[in-house]
Amino acid sequence: MPHQKFQSAIIKPRYAKGALSVFGANSVYPRIPWVAAWWSLTFPGFGHIYLGRYLPGFILIAWELVVNTQANLNMGIALSMLGRFEEAKAIINEEWILLYMGAYIFSIWDSYNSAVEMSKSHILSEVEDAPVVPSVVSAFDIVIVSKKNPLLAAVWSTLSPGLGQLYSGHTIAGTFILAWWIFITHKANTIGSWFYSSIGDFNSATAMVEWQWFLFLPSLYAFAICQAYVAVNENNTLYDIEQIRYLRVRDENLSQQKQSTLENDTLQLIATFEHSPFVEMAIHDMETIGVPSKDIVALPLENVESDTYIIDSLHRVDGRSVLDGAMVSGTIFMLLGTIYGFIWYWGPVIWGLLGLIAGFFIGLIIELALQKNKVKLTASRKNEVFMQVTCNTTMKEQLIKVLKSRKANGYVIMPQRITSDR
Image (tube, rainbow, N blue to C red; front, side, top):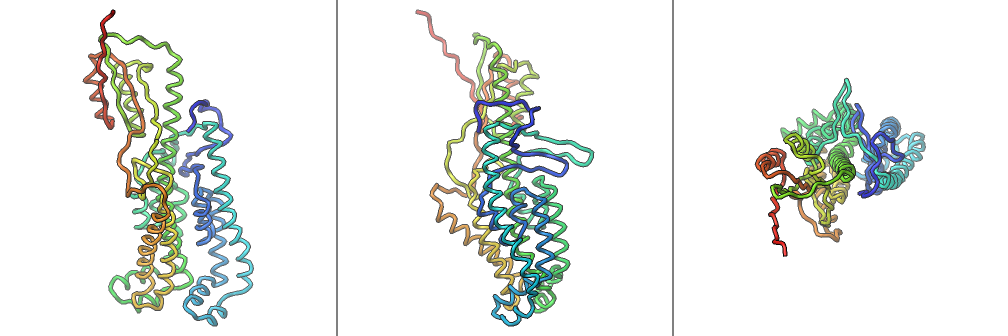
């Protein structure tokens, strides 16, 4: 985080950290390049959406749908993995396959390269201390950068891909993924297959599925869950960055004012908060009851903890999530379960879901084995903002009431140290 430069919010930065519009939130946040490349490997365009590059992502996804379907590529892959090589060669359209390869390789390369360049841009935006507008209000929508629970976003996308993206504020991605999920499930006859699988009629569930379209679903389903989780984490981090900048700019401006000396009937109170709107609400409340702005010091605390957390939470995002590898493994095993489910007894739906679960835990175990830092399951609440208030002792009860109502983690009233003159 920057410590010295505090540019005016009205100055347009050369390197932006993020942006809000009626179409949702987006941010230039460092992503792991190999993860972006992996999502493009599973489905061209996913890596770009993972990075927040929606326009090229949608173009590549549309291209994939057209060319893959015309080439019967999914059917060819499935038949090859089942050992039915002659059928695979007969069904694949060679002309469309030749058209497919160039754009497929480009998608993987470009998503990896974009992740590298975005990481550089993020560093430069930090150096420049680029401001972020925390809210946008229009006739169509109200978009606010706020702290949300990443696990809840993943749950919503588990129930229906796209809902987690809408919850996170990524309206464009959510709308596209939700619409595409409905379209693909219809073309693949997935709803009927789910129904027959749930009642145990696995033969009917397998027979009615359209293989070519059904094999699009494992990548889409796993990606929607992962991207929703990542999107909320990035928004939470963007909120922290924006509030840290606000607090430092505020302190820089107030430090230029003349500070009053501490009098005998004055108390000093120290409190800690998490990054949230309650910090700024508490400052406003204190000013309302008569505490001068210059006597309220609020600054972000530096995080020195190095632990890695399996599950990021509303209270903490460590930026080193070990769930990326787990979701990669889950996608692979879900695809394999779906393919072999066409010949196994429980059918492609059940085996696909079992593959997702098994692959997720296998990938998680591998990630944990490779981690050098101490790993915890999840994070507890933490202190992120330090606040020192100097005021008259008669305001003590009012201050405590404000801190409790604005969700302070804790507070302490500093004792008066009186020494006799010698």
